[in-house]
Structure formats: C-alpha cells, structure tokens
Amino acid sequence: MSYSITEPTSRQKWFAGTLVILYAVITMIPLLWIMMTSFKTPPDSISYPPKVFYTPSLEGYVNLFTTRTRVSPETLASLPPPENFAEEIVRGRDMVIAGPSKFGGRFLNSVIIGFGSTFLSIFLGTLAAYAFSRFKIPLADDLLFFILSTRMMPPIAVAIPIFLMYRKLGLSDTHLGMILLYTAVNISLAVWLLKGFIDEIPREYEEAALIDGYTRFQAFYKVVLPQAATGIASTAIFCLIFAWNEYAFAVLLTSGTAQTAPPFIPTIIGVGGLDWPAIAAGATLFLLPVMIFTVMLRKHLLRGITFGAVRK
Image: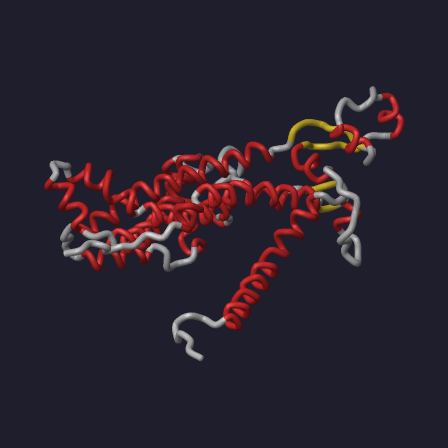
C-alpha cells in the first residue's frame, strides 16, 4: 500500500478539520453572546445563572437609539396611546421617549473616519510601496525601517504630544484630524504589506506594457494594481480594523463633533446602571460594517494568484 508523504491522510484531514471547527466555535461564542444579549431585556441580561433561552425583545435597540425619562404613573396615564412599538416598550418601563440618542451621529463618525483613513492609507501606501519595489531609492532599507518604527511604540506614548499639537493646529475633535492621525499610523503597515505583494509581481509584465507604448503610470494602473488586488484587499481590511476599533486616540482627541462609536458605547447609561442590552446592541451594529466590508472583498482574499509565472 503506497501513500504520498505530502498528501495528508484522511485521519489527518479529519483531525485538522475538527481543530478548525473547534477554534471557529470558540471564537464565535463571545460574538454570539453579545448578539443574544442585544435581544434580551435588562433583567434577563443580568440574571444569574445566565439565560440561554429567553423571550426576544427589541428593548436594547430602542434604548440605544433613544433617550428616555421616567415619569409618574399619573403623567403616564394621561398620555395618548403609543404610536409605535418603541413607545410601547419604553412606557412598559414607566418612561417616555425624550428624543433621539447620539449613537447615530457617533456611528456615522466612525464610518467617515474609518473608511476615509483606510482609503487614504491604501492610496498613499500603494504609491510608496510601488516606489520602494521598482525604483532604486537611496537608503531604502533605512527608510523602510523608519516607516515601520512608527508602529513600535504604543499609542499612549505619543498621545500627549499629539494632543498638544492638535490643540495648537485646531484639529482636535475634527474628522480631518482623526483621518490624518489614523492614516499616519496605518500607512507603515500598508507600505510593508503592499511592498511584499508588489515585489512578487514580475517586472516583465510592466516591461511588456512599456514596450507596447504604455506610460509608467498606465503600466502601474493597468498592470500592477490588478495583480496586487489581493494584497490591497487584505491590507485595507487590516487598516479598517485598526481605525474602526481604535479607542485611546478617540477618547483623548474627540468629545463631541468627531467622537466615534468605541468611546461612546461604554457611556450608555440606563435607569439604575448600565443598560447591557443597549450596549450589546451598539456592539452588534458596530460589528456589521467590518463584516460587510470583509465579505465584499472575500473574492480577492480567497482568489489564488500565481506570481512569477513568466516563462523566459
């Protein structure tokens, strides 16, 4: 009986598959628990032992998008019937809706700052990576190390200097200031990752394009970029995850106009303490853009590209 030393056996495949499934289940449990909590009522969210089976409720999402105030039973009885399910849920807690919450604006700030800084990081990082990969730059290794060194220190180490600089320049609590800051942090990662992908794209592709009459920019745009699509997609996801989840700079440099969702969600306070269903609802909605963005780029992440396939 013969077998390949490189091809895994059925037992090895079964073992590897079991490990992957087990790892996926363990990593998904916290996310599933957050989503489940978002559909609980406040008493169910803090019950002990924790409830796995419960009656779903949208109270957490209603509390997330509204501000509420408690009123007396007499005032509550004098009000007209509820006009929608949100008012009905709130009145069930002897409260009325006072107005919308700030979550919508904070979520929009995250979208603007997160995707804006990701686009800028990818745009500048791709140009810089192409230059380092294709041209002879004096002290290229030293410059690359300097670019990488910007990510070696924790954000808190430079938070105070950046705070003073932003206050002097008038960039505190502005979308532009946060986009520039996240771009400055992410661009080193973008340059290093994209340079590796571009290095693997054969130069013969561009040389053939140049011989056919393409300019250097046309060869870059029509030949290199499509080949580097996988690297650009994966780098964009990493950049977005950092900008989307960043907390320290957002707490220090924003307070209202440009405040993002991460520092806002923990401040959601309900009557009598933290409103865990509302916090879980905010966290659930906060996960969706990154998940959707990753799914949209999955074909680039999963597509196999064979680099260096040029016959000489």
